[in-house]
Length: 518
Image (cartoon, rainbow, N blue to C red; front, side, top):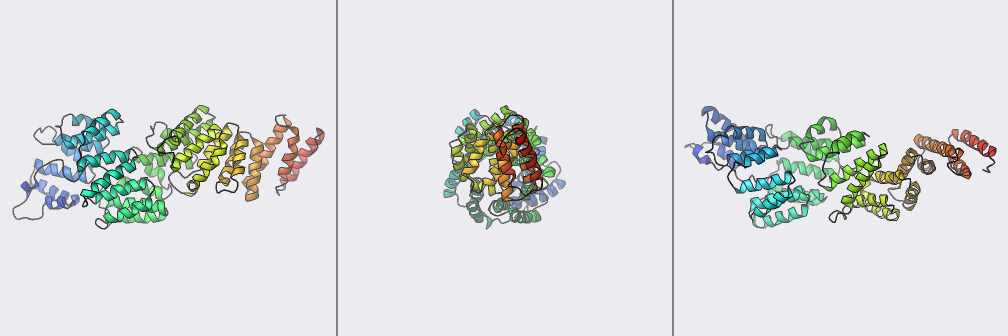
C-alpha cells in the first residue's frame, strides 16, 4: 500500500564497493532485504572511509527501508547542495512524505528532474492534500506498469475503494505470481470489507514464505480480534513483539495502538494521544474511549475539526455532535449530526452496509418515519453484540433524538413493535433515562416499570419512583390530566418496595381532596 520499494530510486552501482575477495558485503544483505545487516556493515565501512558519499547514500537507503525516515532525510538533506547526485531530491521528498511533511515534499520535488517516481509521489501528495484536480491530472500520467498500478491501488485503498484496489491486485497477480506481497495487500482490503476469514486465508500464502513479517502478523492479529476476541489477538501480537528487531521501527506505533484496542481501551490515555497525528485510527479510537467514559466534551474537541473522509469518520462525528448537542440542548448541533448521518445513509455505496443502515435508521428517526425503523434495527442486530471500534449504544443515540423532539410516545410505540427482539432492552433503557431527563415522566415511568419487572435492580426502582413523583407534580400543577393519577397509582402497585405504600397514600389523599376517583 506504499510507494514501490522493489528497487532503489537511487541507481548507484553497489558493485563498485564490492571487494575483490567476495567477502560478505552490504549488497548481499540488501539483496536479501536484510537492511539491518546492511546497515551494520555500511556503518563499519563508513568509519574506515570518511566522507564516502556513495556509502552514505546507501546508508540512507537502508534507513528508509527500515522505516527510519528521519535519519534517511538527514543524510539526503546533508548532500542536497551536491547537484551531481542523481535522484537526490526525489529521495528526499519521499522521506518528507513519509514524515508527513507534505509542503516540504512538494517544494523539494520542484527541484527534481521528471521521473516515474516523481509522478507517483506527486499523485500521492495530491491525495494527501485533498487536491482532486491535481489527483486526476497525475492519474492520467500513470502508465500500465507494476509500480504505477500499485500506486493507483494504494489511492483506491486510502479512499475506501477496496474492491477497486482488489481488482488491480488480481490483475497484477496474473503476470506476477512471484509478487507474494500482493496477497498481503489484498488481505488488507478484504479486512476492510469485513471479510476477515477471507483475509486470513489469503495471508497464509505469504506466511509460508515470510512467517516473520511484521505487517502480516499484525494483520493476522487484527483478523483474530474480529473473528474471536482481544485475547487471541493480543497473544499473536505478543509473539510479534518478542521477535521484532530493535532497529525495526516500521510497525512500532501500529503495535502500540492495536494493543490498546485489543485490551478494550486499557492504556488509551498513555498511548493514543501521541499517535493522533500519526495513525488516523488513533484519533477515532480515542474519541470512542472518551465517549465510553462519558467525557463527551473531550470527544468533541478531538473530532470537531476533523474533515470526514470515510463512513466511519462521518458516523463517529455525527454521534459526537448528537450526544453533545443533546447534553447542551443545542438543536443546531443535533442537526449537524443528522446531516452527517444522512450523508452516509443516503450514499449509494454505503446504503447496503451495516454503517449505512445505521445512518439510515437515524434519518428515519429524525423524519418521524418510525414504522420503518424496526426494519433497520433488525438488519443491524449484530452491531449491538459485536465488540468492534464503534461498540456503544447506537440505538440509544437515535432514540435520544426522538425523545429530544418530544416524541416519546413514538419511541414507546417503537419499543412495543420490537418488544421481543434482542434490541428491546437497549431501547427500553433509552426511553426510561432520556424521557426522565426531558421531563417526559409518564413514558419514563412506564419504561422503568418494565425494566423493574425484568430485573429487580435498585436503580430501576429509584428511576420509577422519581418518574412517578415527576408525573404527580405535573398533575398537581395542571400540566397533565387529573385522572392520570389512577394510572400512576396502578403502576406503583407493581413494585414491592416498602416506599410504595407511602407514595400511594399521599397521592390518594390529594385525589380525595380534589374529588378524583382512584
